[in-house]
Length: 89
Image: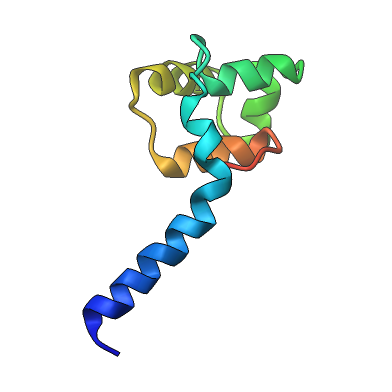
């Protein structure tokens, strides 16, 4: 199979797999950020989330600030999502 044809098939498969998420493009991030909004909605304290992901409470405050500023890594987002019992997409 030619490389161009293979790449086209891969792009089409990726597009098909992402279709369920198209409606989410129009969802705005909460002004407090997703992490704080979800943590608060769950009634979870910073200390509890910190314990769940193995960091101190002040690190949670920094993570929440960094999310708003756009300074979080995917690795950190995944770790926090796991601590919130969420799926990071």
